[in-house]
Amino acid sequence: MVLAKDLIERGYFPSELPPPFNTISLSNNLSNLPSGLNKIKASSKCCRHSIPKVENSRRLLGIPNPLHYIILCNNIENNWTVLEQHVNNSRFSLTTPEVRQTPERALTRKHDWGVIAERRITEMPSSRFLVRTDISNYYPTIYTHSISWALHSKTVSKARQKDKHLLGNILDAGIRNTQDRQTMGIPIGPDTSLLISEIIGSAIDKILVDCIPNLTGFRYIDDYYFYFHTLAEAESAISTINAALRQYELDINSEKTKILALPQPVQSAWRSELSRYRIRRFSKGQKEDLVTYFSKAFEYSIAFPNDSILKYALGRFKRHRVTAECWTLFEALILKCIVAEPGVLPFATKIFLTYSKQGDYYLNKNKISEALFSVISYHAKLNHGFEVAWALWLCKSLDIQLNSQVAKQVALCSDPVVALITLDMRNVGLIPRIDISPWRFAFANANELYDEHWLLAYEAKIKGWVRLGQGNNHVANDPFFQILAKYGVSFYDRNRQVDVFDLFKNTTQKGNDNNKNDSADTNEFFDEVFPEGEGDYEYEEEIEEPLEGYW
Image (cartoon, rainbow, N blue to C red; front, side):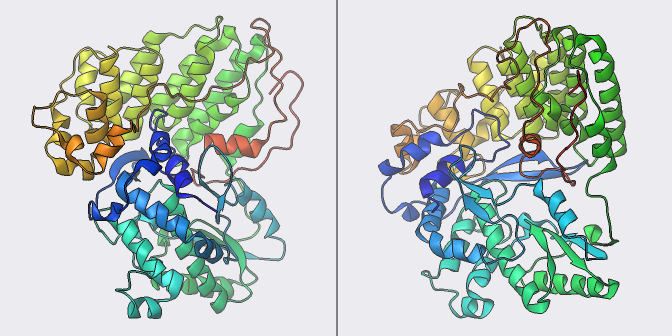
Protein backbone atom coordinates (compact mmCIF):
# COMPACT_ATOMS: atom_id res chain seq x y z
CA MET A 1 0.00 0.00 0.00
CA VAL A 2 1.24 3.46 -0.83
CA LEU A 3 1.31 5.94 2.04
CA ALA A 4 0.76 9.67 1.72
CA LYS A 5 3.96 10.16 3.70
CA ASP A 6 5.95 8.27 1.06
CA LEU A 7 4.30 10.11 -1.84
CA ILE A 8 5.28 13.37 -0.15
CA GLU A 9 8.82 12.36 0.83
CA ARG A 10 9.86 10.42 -2.29
CA GLY A 11 7.19 11.10 -4.89
CA TYR A 12 6.69 14.85 -4.82
CA PHE A 13 9.52 16.85 -6.41
CA PRO A 14 10.57 15.82 -9.94
CA SER A 15 13.71 13.70 -10.06
CA GLU A 16 15.31 16.11 -12.54
CA LEU A 17 15.87 18.81 -9.90
CA PRO A 18 19.35 19.41 -8.44
CA PRO A 19 19.99 17.58 -5.14
CA PRO A 20 19.30 20.38 -2.60
CA PHE A 21 15.60 20.33 -3.48
CA ASN A 22 13.77 17.79 -1.34
CA THR A 23 10.61 17.25 0.72
CA ILE A 24 11.94 15.18 3.62
CA SER A 25 11.26 17.71 6.34
CA LEU A 26 7.72 18.24 5.06
CA SER A 27 7.10 14.51 5.23
CA ASN A 28 8.50 14.36 8.76
CA ASN A 29 6.12 17.05 9.98
CA LEU A 30 2.82 15.90 8.52
CA SER A 31 1.54 15.06 12.00
CA ASN A 32 1.95 18.71 13.00
CA LEU A 33 -0.46 19.94 10.35
CA PRO A 34 -4.00 20.84 11.42
CA SER A 35 -7.13 19.12 10.17
CA GLY A 36 -9.31 20.82 7.62
CA LEU A 37 -6.54 21.61 5.12
CA ASN A 38 -9.09 21.74 2.31
CA LYS A 39 -10.66 24.83 3.91
CA ILE A 40 -7.49 26.96 3.86
CA LYS A 41 -7.25 27.74 0.14
CA ALA A 42 -9.43 26.61 -2.76
CA SER A 43 -6.61 26.07 -5.26
CA SER A 44 -3.04 26.93 -6.13
CA LYS A 45 -0.60 26.92 -9.05
CA CYS A 46 2.36 24.68 -9.79
CA CYS A 47 5.89 26.00 -10.03
CA ARG A 48 7.14 25.41 -13.56
CA HIS A 49 10.60 24.12 -14.38
CA SER A 50 11.67 23.76 -18.00
CA ILE A 51 13.80 20.77 -19.02
CA PRO A 52 15.13 19.74 -22.46
CA LYS A 53 13.16 17.10 -24.33
CA VAL A 54 14.51 16.86 -27.87
CA GLU A 55 16.13 19.43 -30.14
CA ASN A 56 14.19 22.73 -29.96
CA SER A 57 11.56 21.10 -27.75
CA ARG A 58 11.00 21.52 -24.02
CA ARG A 59 9.04 19.79 -21.29
CA LEU A 60 7.51 21.80 -18.44
CA LEU A 61 7.67 20.03 -15.10
CA GLY A 62 5.10 20.90 -12.46
CA ILE A 63 5.86 21.27 -8.74
CA PRO A 64 2.48 21.45 -6.96
CA ASN A 65 1.89 23.60 -3.92
CA PRO A 66 2.41 21.48 -0.77
CA LEU A 67 -1.05 22.26 0.61
CA HIS A 68 -2.98 20.74 -2.27
CA TYR A 69 -0.44 18.02 -2.96
CA ILE A 70 -0.83 16.76 0.62
CA ILE A 71 -4.61 16.68 0.21
CA LEU A 72 -4.27 14.73 -3.04
CA CYS A 73 -1.86 12.23 -1.48
CA ASN A 74 -4.15 11.64 1.50
CA ASN A 75 -7.02 10.83 -0.85
CA ILE A 76 -4.84 8.41 -2.83
CA GLU A 77 -3.75 6.62 0.33
CA ASN A 78 -7.33 6.36 1.56
CA ASN A 79 -8.46 4.74 -1.71
CA TRP A 80 -5.33 2.82 -2.68
CA THR A 81 -6.95 -0.63 -2.72
CA VAL A 82 -9.48 0.40 -5.38
CA LEU A 83 -6.91 2.32 -7.42
CA GLU A 84 -4.37 -0.49 -7.35
CA GLN A 85 -6.97 -3.01 -8.49
CA HIS A 86 -7.95 -0.75 -11.39
CA VAL A 87 -4.44 -0.21 -12.78
CA ASN A 88 -3.52 -3.88 -12.29
CA ASN A 89 -6.29 -4.91 -14.68
CA SER A 90 -4.36 -3.77 -17.75
CA ARG A 91 -3.22 -6.56 -20.04
CA PHE A 92 -0.75 -4.39 -21.91
CA SER A 93 0.87 -2.00 -19.46
CA LEU A 94 4.55 -2.36 -18.58
CA THR A 95 4.33 0.73 -16.39
CA THR A 96 1.77 -0.24 -13.78
CA PRO A 97 2.66 1.74 -10.62
CA GLU A 98 4.22 -0.41 -7.91
CA VAL A 99 5.11 0.35 -4.31
CA ARG A 100 8.69 -0.60 -3.61
CA GLN A 101 10.89 0.12 -0.64
CA THR A 102 13.46 2.10 -2.61
CA PRO A 103 15.03 5.43 -1.68
CA GLU A 104 14.35 6.94 -5.10
CA ARG A 105 10.58 7.13 -5.63
CA ALA A 106 7.37 6.20 -3.82
CA LEU A 107 5.79 4.71 -6.94
CA THR A 108 7.88 3.00 -9.60
CA ARG A 109 6.98 1.55 -12.97
CA LYS A 110 6.58 -2.22 -12.99
CA HIS A 111 9.25 -2.53 -15.68
CA ASP A 112 12.05 -0.15 -16.55
CA TRP A 113 12.65 1.21 -20.03
CA GLY A 114 15.27 -1.41 -20.83
CA VAL A 115 12.69 -4.21 -20.99
CA ILE A 116 11.19 -2.83 -24.22
CA ALA A 117 14.00 -4.21 -26.40
CA GLU A 118 13.48 -7.69 -24.99
CA ARG A 119 9.71 -7.50 -25.39
CA ARG A 120 10.06 -6.35 -28.98
CA ILE A 121 12.14 -9.43 -29.70
CA THR A 122 9.90 -11.92 -27.89
CA GLU A 123 6.74 -10.51 -29.52
CA MET A 124 8.15 -10.75 -33.04
CA PRO A 125 8.30 -14.46 -34.06
CA SER A 126 4.77 -15.11 -35.32
CA SER A 127 3.94 -11.58 -36.49
CA ARG A 128 4.61 -9.80 -39.76
CA PHE A 129 3.68 -6.21 -38.90
CA LEU A 130 4.23 -3.86 -35.97
CA VAL A 131 2.01 -0.88 -35.20
CA ARG A 132 3.96 1.66 -33.22
CA THR A 133 2.22 4.80 -31.99
CA ASP A 134 1.75 7.01 -28.96
CA ILE A 135 -0.59 9.58 -27.49
CA SER A 136 0.03 13.11 -28.64
CA ASN A 137 1.28 15.28 -25.77
CA TYR A 138 -0.21 12.90 -23.20
CA TYR A 139 0.17 14.47 -19.74
CA PRO A 140 -0.57 18.08 -20.84
CA THR A 141 -3.75 17.01 -22.69
CA ILE A 142 -5.33 14.73 -20.09
CA TYR A 143 -8.83 16.00 -19.38
CA THR A 144 -9.14 15.75 -15.60
CA HIS A 145 -12.85 14.86 -15.72
CA SER A 146 -11.83 11.73 -17.66
CA ILE A 147 -10.25 10.35 -14.47
CA SER A 148 -13.76 9.68 -13.24
CA TRP A 149 -14.76 8.24 -16.62
CA ALA A 150 -11.89 5.76 -16.40
CA LEU A 151 -12.79 4.64 -12.88
CA HIS A 152 -16.61 4.57 -13.11
CA SER A 153 -17.56 4.86 -16.82
CA LYS A 154 -18.69 8.04 -18.53
CA THR A 155 -22.36 7.25 -17.92
CA VAL A 156 -21.97 6.94 -14.16
CA SER A 157 -19.66 9.95 -13.95
CA LYS A 158 -22.03 12.24 -15.81
CA ALA A 159 -24.95 11.09 -13.70
CA ARG A 160 -22.98 11.77 -10.50
CA GLN A 161 -20.85 14.70 -11.62
CA LYS A 162 -21.69 16.70 -8.49
CA ASP A 163 -21.15 13.81 -6.10
CA LYS A 164 -18.19 14.88 -3.96
CA HIS A 165 -17.88 11.38 -2.52
CA LEU A 166 -17.30 9.66 -5.87
CA LEU A 167 -13.63 8.63 -6.04
CA GLY A 168 -13.16 9.84 -9.60
CA ASN A 169 -14.51 13.27 -8.68
CA ILE A 170 -12.25 13.41 -5.62
CA LEU A 171 -9.15 12.77 -7.72
CA ASP A 172 -10.37 15.09 -10.46
CA ALA A 173 -10.79 17.93 -7.97
CA GLY A 174 -7.49 17.07 -6.29
CA ILE A 175 -5.55 17.40 -9.54
CA ARG A 176 -7.40 20.55 -10.60
CA ASN A 177 -6.72 22.21 -7.25
CA THR A 178 -2.97 21.84 -7.79
CA GLN A 179 -3.18 23.79 -11.05
CA ASP A 180 -5.54 26.70 -10.52
CA ARG A 181 -8.59 24.49 -11.13
CA GLN A 182 -7.68 23.91 -14.78
CA THR A 183 -9.24 20.80 -16.30
CA MET A 184 -6.60 20.34 -19.00
CA GLY A 185 -3.41 18.48 -18.16
CA ILE A 186 -1.75 16.99 -15.10
CA PRO A 187 1.59 18.01 -13.54
CA ILE A 188 4.64 16.33 -15.04
CA GLY A 189 7.01 15.09 -12.36
CA PRO A 190 5.13 13.89 -9.24
CA ASP A 191 4.48 10.17 -8.74
CA THR A 192 0.79 10.92 -8.43
CA SER A 193 0.73 11.74 -12.13
CA LEU A 194 2.12 8.31 -13.00
CA LEU A 195 -0.86 6.85 -11.16
CA ILE A 196 -3.36 9.15 -12.89
CA SER A 197 -1.91 8.40 -16.32
CA GLU A 198 -2.18 4.66 -15.68
CA ILE A 199 -5.76 4.97 -14.43
CA ILE A 200 -6.69 6.39 -17.82
CA GLY A 201 -4.28 4.19 -19.78
CA SER A 202 -5.71 1.04 -18.22
CA ALA A 203 -9.24 2.08 -19.14
CA ILE A 204 -8.16 2.63 -22.75
CA ASP A 205 -6.46 -0.78 -22.73
CA LYS A 206 -9.76 -2.37 -21.75
CA ILE A 207 -11.48 -0.72 -24.73
CA LEU A 208 -8.81 -2.13 -27.04
CA VAL A 209 -9.21 -5.64 -25.61
CA ASP A 210 -12.99 -5.46 -26.00
CA CYS A 211 -12.62 -4.35 -29.63
CA ILE A 212 -9.71 -6.65 -30.56
CA PRO A 213 -9.82 -9.66 -28.19
CA ASN A 214 -6.71 -11.32 -29.65
CA LEU A 215 -4.62 -8.15 -29.65
CA THR A 216 -0.94 -8.84 -28.92
CA GLY A 217 1.56 -6.26 -27.70
CA PHE A 218 2.32 -3.87 -24.89
CA ARG A 219 2.15 -0.27 -23.72
CA TYR A 220 4.84 1.78 -22.00
CA ILE A 221 3.11 4.87 -20.48
CA ASP A 222 1.67 6.23 -23.75
CA ASP A 223 3.81 4.30 -26.26
CA TYR A 224 1.99 1.42 -27.96
CA TYR A 225 3.55 -1.61 -29.67
CA PHE A 226 1.04 -4.03 -31.26
CA TYR A 227 1.72 -6.99 -33.54
CA PHE A 228 -0.32 -8.38 -36.45
CA HIS A 229 -0.23 -11.05 -39.13
CA THR A 230 -1.64 -8.91 -41.95
CA LEU A 231 -1.40 -5.33 -43.10
CA ALA A 232 -5.19 -5.03 -43.05
CA GLU A 233 -5.29 -5.99 -39.36
CA ALA A 234 -2.65 -3.37 -38.57
CA GLU A 235 -4.51 -0.64 -40.44
CA SER A 236 -7.76 -1.52 -38.70
CA ALA A 237 -6.04 -1.45 -35.31
CA ILE A 238 -4.82 2.11 -35.82
CA SER A 239 -8.40 3.19 -36.41
CA THR A 240 -9.50 1.35 -33.25
CA ILE A 241 -6.72 2.92 -31.15
CA ASN A 242 -7.63 6.38 -32.40
CA ALA A 243 -11.31 5.84 -31.56
CA ALA A 244 -10.43 4.56 -28.08
CA LEU A 245 -8.29 7.61 -27.38
CA ARG A 246 -10.98 9.98 -28.57
CA GLN A 247 -13.35 8.54 -25.94
CA TYR A 248 -11.00 10.15 -23.40
CA GLU A 249 -10.49 13.39 -25.34
CA LEU A 250 -6.99 12.29 -26.38
CA ASP A 251 -5.36 12.21 -29.80
CA ILE A 252 -3.12 9.74 -31.52
CA ASN A 253 0.30 11.09 -32.51
CA SER A 254 0.03 10.89 -36.29
CA GLU A 255 3.69 11.78 -36.82
CA LYS A 256 4.85 8.78 -34.78
CA THR A 257 2.20 6.34 -35.95
CA LYS A 258 3.79 3.74 -38.19
CA ILE A 259 3.13 0.29 -39.60
CA LEU A 260 6.46 -1.50 -39.83
CA ALA A 261 7.20 -4.75 -41.60
CA LEU A 262 8.96 -7.21 -39.32
CA PRO A 263 11.64 -7.93 -38.32
CA GLN A 264 12.82 -4.48 -37.24
CA PRO A 265 16.01 -3.39 -35.46
CA VAL A 266 15.44 -3.15 -31.73
CA GLN A 267 18.09 -0.50 -31.17
CA SER A 268 19.46 2.40 -33.19
CA ALA A 269 22.54 2.03 -35.37
CA TRP A 270 24.46 4.65 -33.40
CA ARG A 271 23.94 2.82 -30.12
CA SER A 272 24.97 -0.45 -31.66
CA GLU A 273 28.22 1.07 -32.88
CA LEU A 274 29.06 3.04 -29.73
CA SER A 275 28.45 -0.01 -27.55
CA ARG A 276 31.11 -1.90 -29.49
CA TYR A 277 33.84 0.64 -28.82
CA ARG A 278 36.44 -0.54 -26.33
CA ILE A 279 38.60 1.83 -24.34
CA ARG A 280 41.80 0.46 -22.88
CA ARG A 281 42.24 0.54 -19.14
CA PHE A 282 45.83 1.71 -19.23
CA SER A 283 47.15 5.17 -20.04
CA LYS A 284 49.02 3.84 -23.05
CA GLY A 285 46.34 3.69 -25.70
CA GLN A 286 43.54 5.15 -23.57
CA LYS A 287 43.98 8.66 -24.97
CA GLU A 288 43.67 7.40 -28.52
CA ASP A 289 40.60 5.37 -27.60
CA LEU A 290 38.93 8.34 -25.89
CA VAL A 291 39.47 10.55 -28.94
CA THR A 292 38.13 7.89 -31.31
CA TYR A 293 35.12 7.11 -29.13
CA PHE A 294 34.01 10.70 -28.54
CA SER A 295 34.72 11.71 -32.13
CA LYS A 296 32.19 9.12 -33.23
CA ALA A 297 29.77 10.21 -30.48
CA PHE A 298 30.03 13.85 -31.60
CA GLU A 299 29.43 12.78 -35.19
CA TYR A 300 26.28 10.89 -34.24
CA SER A 301 25.03 13.71 -32.00
CA ILE A 302 24.98 15.98 -35.06
CA ALA A 303 23.34 13.36 -37.26
CA PHE A 304 20.69 12.47 -34.65
CA PRO A 305 19.97 15.68 -32.68
CA ASN A 306 16.77 14.27 -31.16
CA ASP A 307 18.62 11.47 -29.37
CA SER A 308 20.59 12.02 -26.17
CA ILE A 309 23.72 10.51 -27.65
CA LEU A 310 26.28 12.38 -25.57
CA LYS A 311 24.47 11.39 -22.39
CA TYR A 312 24.75 7.80 -23.52
CA ALA A 313 28.41 8.25 -24.47
CA LEU A 314 29.30 9.55 -21.01
CA GLY A 315 27.23 6.83 -19.35
CA ARG A 316 29.83 4.10 -19.57
CA PHE A 317 32.14 6.16 -17.36
CA LYS A 318 29.88 5.50 -14.40
CA ARG A 319 31.70 2.23 -13.87
CA HIS A 320 35.03 2.68 -15.58
CA ARG A 321 37.92 4.87 -14.58
CA VAL A 322 39.99 7.19 -16.69
CA THR A 323 43.68 7.30 -15.78
CA ALA A 324 45.21 10.39 -14.19
CA GLU A 325 47.40 10.82 -17.27
CA CYS A 326 44.30 11.00 -19.48
CA TRP A 327 42.24 13.20 -17.16
CA THR A 328 42.98 16.53 -18.88
CA LEU A 329 41.75 15.13 -22.18
CA PHE A 330 38.71 13.51 -20.60
CA GLU A 331 37.84 16.72 -18.75
CA ALA A 332 37.89 18.66 -22.03
CA LEU A 333 35.64 16.07 -23.67
CA ILE A 334 33.15 16.31 -20.80
CA LEU A 335 33.04 20.10 -21.17
CA LYS A 336 32.37 19.79 -24.90
CA CYS A 337 29.50 17.44 -24.10
CA ILE A 338 28.10 19.92 -21.56
CA VAL A 339 28.07 22.83 -24.00
CA ALA A 340 26.65 20.77 -26.87
CA GLU A 341 24.10 18.78 -24.84
CA PRO A 342 23.46 20.32 -21.40
CA GLY A 343 21.25 17.38 -20.49
CA VAL A 344 24.48 15.63 -19.47
CA LEU A 345 25.01 18.11 -16.59
CA PRO A 346 23.70 15.89 -13.75
CA PHE A 347 25.91 13.03 -14.91
CA ALA A 348 28.87 15.33 -15.51
CA THR A 349 28.45 16.70 -11.98
CA LYS A 350 28.85 13.18 -10.59
CA ILE A 351 31.96 12.61 -12.69
CA PHE A 352 33.62 15.87 -11.63
CA LEU A 353 32.86 15.34 -7.94
CA THR A 354 34.10 11.74 -8.13
CA TYR A 355 37.47 12.74 -9.54
CA SER A 356 37.79 15.92 -7.46
CA LYS A 357 38.26 13.76 -4.35
CA GLN A 358 41.37 12.08 -5.80
CA GLY A 359 44.78 13.66 -5.33
CA ASP A 360 46.18 12.61 -8.70
CA TYR A 361 43.43 14.37 -10.66
CA TYR A 362 43.60 18.13 -11.19
CA LEU A 363 40.36 19.85 -12.17
CA ASN A 364 40.99 22.87 -14.34
CA LYS A 365 38.43 25.25 -12.85
CA ASN A 366 39.25 27.98 -15.36
CA LYS A 367 38.17 25.77 -18.25
CA ILE A 368 35.23 24.35 -16.31
CA SER A 369 33.97 27.82 -15.42
CA GLU A 370 34.38 28.98 -19.02
CA ALA A 371 32.13 26.17 -20.23
CA LEU A 372 29.57 26.58 -17.44
CA PHE A 373 29.42 30.36 -17.88
CA SER A 374 28.74 29.79 -21.57
CA VAL A 375 25.85 27.46 -20.75
CA ILE A 376 24.41 29.86 -18.18
CA SER A 377 24.64 32.93 -20.41
CA TYR A 378 23.09 31.16 -23.39
CA HIS A 379 20.21 29.42 -21.60
CA ALA A 380 19.29 32.02 -18.94
CA LYS A 381 17.83 34.46 -21.44
CA LEU A 382 15.74 31.60 -22.86
CA ASN A 383 14.47 30.74 -19.37
CA HIS A 384 15.81 27.20 -19.67
CA GLY A 385 15.67 26.35 -15.99
CA PHE A 386 17.25 22.88 -16.07
CA GLU A 387 20.44 23.95 -17.84
CA VAL A 388 20.96 27.07 -15.74
CA ALA A 389 20.13 25.38 -12.42
CA TRP A 390 22.50 22.45 -12.94
CA ALA A 391 25.29 24.68 -14.25
CA LEU A 392 24.91 26.86 -11.16
CA TRP A 393 24.88 23.83 -8.89
CA LEU A 394 28.06 22.50 -10.44
CA CYS A 395 29.67 25.93 -9.97
CA LYS A 396 28.66 25.88 -6.31
CA SER A 397 29.84 22.30 -5.86
CA LEU A 398 33.29 23.20 -7.21
CA ASP A 399 33.46 26.60 -5.43
CA ILE A 400 33.46 28.49 -8.71
CA GLN A 401 32.58 32.15 -8.31
CA LEU A 402 30.31 33.79 -10.88
CA ASN A 403 31.45 37.04 -12.42
CA SER A 404 29.13 40.04 -12.57
CA GLN A 405 28.32 39.59 -16.25
CA VAL A 406 27.15 36.01 -15.82
CA ALA A 407 25.25 36.93 -12.63
CA LYS A 408 23.39 39.58 -14.60
CA GLN A 409 22.32 36.93 -17.11
CA VAL A 410 21.13 34.60 -14.34
CA ALA A 411 18.76 37.27 -13.03
CA LEU A 412 16.97 37.16 -16.40
CA CYS A 413 15.78 33.61 -15.67
CA SER A 414 12.46 33.60 -13.79
CA ASP A 415 12.68 29.93 -12.81
CA PRO A 416 12.27 29.56 -8.99
CA VAL A 417 14.73 26.65 -8.89
CA VAL A 418 17.38 28.85 -10.52
CA ALA A 419 16.55 31.74 -8.20
CA LEU A 420 17.02 29.68 -5.03
CA ILE A 421 20.38 28.24 -6.09
CA THR A 422 21.49 31.74 -7.05
CA LEU A 423 20.47 33.16 -3.67
CA ASP A 424 22.27 30.31 -1.94
CA MET A 425 25.44 31.07 -3.92
CA ARG A 426 25.16 34.74 -3.07
CA ASN A 427 24.77 33.84 0.59
CA VAL A 428 28.03 31.85 0.61
CA GLY A 429 29.96 34.47 -1.37
CA LEU A 430 30.08 32.79 -4.77
CA ILE A 431 28.10 35.63 -6.35
CA PRO A 432 29.50 38.89 -4.99
CA ARG A 433 26.79 41.10 -6.40
CA ILE A 434 23.55 40.50 -8.24
CA ASP A 435 20.41 42.51 -8.84
CA ILE A 436 17.52 40.31 -7.72
CA SER A 437 14.83 42.89 -8.40
CA PRO A 438 13.45 40.77 -11.30
CA TRP A 439 12.46 38.14 -8.71
CA ARG A 440 10.80 40.48 -6.20
CA PHE A 441 7.38 39.86 -7.71
CA ALA A 442 7.46 36.54 -5.81
CA PHE A 443 7.21 38.48 -2.55
CA ALA A 444 4.73 41.14 -3.66
CA ASN A 445 1.70 39.87 -1.74
CA ALA A 446 0.32 36.96 0.27
CA ASN A 447 -1.18 35.29 -2.81
CA GLU A 448 2.32 34.53 -4.12
CA LEU A 449 2.53 31.67 -1.60
CA TYR A 450 -0.07 29.89 -3.71
CA ASP A 451 1.05 31.14 -7.11
CA GLU A 452 3.57 29.64 -9.54
CA HIS A 453 6.52 30.98 -7.54
CA TRP A 454 5.40 29.65 -4.14
CA LEU A 455 8.69 27.77 -3.69
CA LEU A 456 10.76 30.93 -4.01
CA ALA A 457 8.31 33.01 -1.96
CA TYR A 458 8.46 30.60 0.98
CA GLU A 459 12.02 29.28 0.92
CA ALA A 460 13.84 32.57 0.36
CA LYS A 461 11.84 34.11 3.21
CA ILE A 462 12.54 31.43 5.82
CA LYS A 463 16.21 31.24 4.80
CA GLY A 464 16.57 35.01 5.19
CA TRP A 465 18.04 35.33 1.70
CA VAL A 466 16.01 38.40 0.74
CA ARG A 467 15.36 41.67 2.53
CA LEU A 468 11.67 42.39 2.59
CA GLY A 469 9.72 45.39 3.74
CA GLN A 470 8.57 45.73 7.33
CA GLY A 471 5.01 44.83 6.47
CA ASN A 472 5.90 41.71 4.52
CA ASN A 473 4.85 38.95 6.91
CA HIS A 474 3.11 36.76 4.38
CA VAL A 475 4.53 33.48 5.67
CA ALA A 476 3.83 34.32 9.31
CA ASN A 477 0.26 35.36 8.49
CA ASP A 478 -0.64 32.35 6.38
CA PRO A 479 -2.47 29.56 8.28
CA PHE A 480 -0.64 26.81 6.38
CA PHE A 481 2.85 28.12 5.68
CA GLN A 482 3.27 29.57 9.16
CA ILE A 483 3.02 26.03 10.52
CA LEU A 484 5.63 24.79 8.05
CA ALA A 485 7.94 27.59 9.11
CA LYS A 486 7.26 26.96 12.80
CA TYR A 487 8.45 23.37 12.53
CA GLY A 488 11.41 24.17 10.33
CA VAL A 489 10.07 22.68 7.11
CA SER A 490 12.43 23.51 4.26
CA PHE A 491 12.50 22.47 0.62
CA TYR A 492 16.16 23.34 0.08
CA ASP A 493 19.06 21.64 1.87
CA ARG A 494 22.38 23.07 0.70
CA ASN A 495 24.23 20.10 2.22
CA ARG A 496 22.61 17.52 -0.04
CA GLN A 497 24.70 16.39 -2.99
CA VAL A 498 24.70 13.93 -5.87
CA ASP A 499 26.12 10.48 -5.21
CA VAL A 500 29.62 10.00 -6.54
CA PHE A 501 30.72 6.91 -8.45
CA ASP A 502 32.59 4.13 -6.68
CA LEU A 503 35.56 4.05 -9.05
CA PHE A 504 38.49 4.10 -6.65
CA LYS A 505 37.53 1.55 -4.01
CA ASN A 506 40.35 -0.90 -3.26
CA THR A 507 42.50 0.50 -6.06
CA THR A 508 45.73 2.44 -6.08
CA GLN A 509 46.01 5.83 -7.67
CA LYS A 510 48.98 4.74 -9.72
CA GLY A 511 48.64 2.06 -12.35
CA ASN A 512 44.88 2.44 -12.61
CA ASP A 513 44.36 -1.09 -13.91
CA ASN A 514 41.93 -2.56 -11.41
CA ASN A 515 38.78 -1.19 -12.97
CA LYS A 516 37.03 -4.50 -13.60
CA ASN A 517 33.38 -3.75 -13.06
CA ASP A 518 32.15 -5.14 -16.33
CA SER A 519 29.79 -7.60 -14.67
CA ALA A 520 27.53 -4.82 -13.38
CA ASP A 521 23.99 -5.01 -14.59
CA THR A 522 23.61 -3.01 -17.77
CA ASN A 523 19.93 -2.27 -17.33
CA GLU A 524 20.80 -0.53 -14.06
CA PHE A 525 23.38 1.48 -16.00
CA PHE A 526 20.81 2.54 -18.56
CA ASP A 527 18.31 3.66 -15.93
CA GLU A 528 21.01 5.73 -14.24
CA VAL A 529 21.94 7.52 -17.45
CA PHE A 530 18.43 7.75 -18.86
CA PRO A 531 16.04 7.98 -15.87
CA GLU A 532 12.36 7.39 -16.59
CA GLY A 533 13.02 6.20 -20.13
CA GLU A 534 14.41 9.35 -21.69
CA GLY A 535 15.12 9.24 -25.40
CA ASP A 536 13.25 7.60 -28.24
CA TYR A 537 15.25 4.39 -28.32
CA GLU A 538 15.69 1.24 -26.31
CA TYR A 539 18.59 -0.30 -24.48
CA GLU A 540 19.66 -3.87 -25.11
CA GLU A 541 21.89 -5.66 -22.63
CA GLU A 542 25.39 -6.23 -23.92
CA ILE A 543 26.40 -9.89 -23.81
CA GLU A 544 29.88 -9.54 -25.26
CA GLU A 545 32.75 -10.07 -22.86
CA PRO A 546 35.26 -7.20 -22.90
CA LEU A 547 38.62 -7.85 -24.47
CA GLU A 548 41.49 -8.21 -22.05
CA GLY A 549 42.86 -4.81 -21.10
CA TYR A 550 39.69 -3.04 -22.32
CA TRP A 551 36.33 -2.03 -20.92
